[in-house]
Length: 144
Image 1 (cartoon, helix red, strand yellow):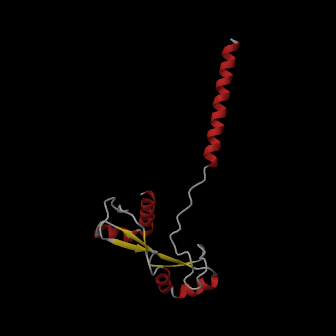
Image 2 (cartoon, helix red, strand yellow; image 1 turned 90 degrees about the vertical axis):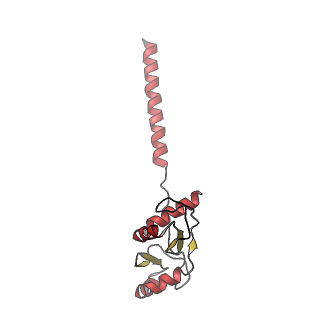
């Protein structure tokens, strides 16, 4: 009878230890950093941009380094969006982020990223949620 009690207590302790270790592992897992898809330097000063200081127009954001530049940028947002993203960087995706098909010559641009697409239908869908599809394309390109 004592052997059965020892075995039962041992099993309970093993279960508790395993549960605690699993909880620790799950609790210590850090979430992934969100992908920053904006300009990294202020289009006015050239200093590092601050993700908290931005102006938005037509679904695109342009980021500035300080409150002074932000105030100037808000007065002419389109101008600074064009300046910040004058040379779009190809994402390098080979799969269309909208349909999952192989890309063709079709492409869309958003916040300095040139995203390859498969067709004009996907271009229309991309325009409805460019941030989402740019992030998908960046993920695909990094995985390839």
